[in-house]
Image (cartoon, rainbow, N blue to C red):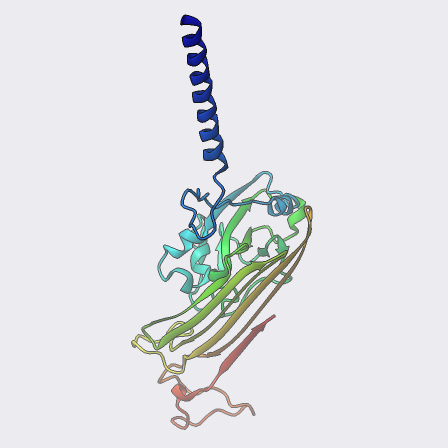
Length: 297
């Protein structure tokens, strides 16, 4: 009797083990049944892949021995007017930078006159940015550095300061458009778009601004006489990833601005083109019609 009972116990124990293994196998396999919705699906978070091409590009022109002040896009947006303000307003936040005139927009770094170099993605702009208009729009800037101090020879002769701009890249497909406005008949519609498609990355930004105060008002009145300005700006960036260590990049920018030079009432008559003096009271200085057009491509 004891032997028979022991055999039955062993058989029942083996049956329990086999049943448990079968249950585990069915729980792990868990094949979906046709017409039945799968509920035990685990959603994984987004994965961000960061490349090293930008870092390798920046290493070509190092800022050894220099002082670099960095401002990113989020910091620019928190400033007054945000992305609708002039790019000079963002640079003015850096230490040691002063502006001689709101109209001309000329910046001075550490008391130097001119000799300010601009780079976009470490590509040197051929000429310094000058004039009444602002060719650069802060909306396409991802971050920028103002580099001053003892600069290496790679930076050339314009060494009062280097404004090194890094543009937006790797955006999600889409864009936005809006309108900004304010006093002095200021209105500024803008649009930007960007995205990635396979090995392509692209970004575009365009804006138009009309204002009744293009240059400083030379009089004490609230509204300037003959001071309207229309300014168009656009920027386009595209890159194609050739392989893990090579990339082809295209950057294009354009700006077209018109300015009315403001007039002042009651000025004494000057000299006529022929050399003769204007007769007193024959010409009103507030009706002088001088204009300036600035184009940069």
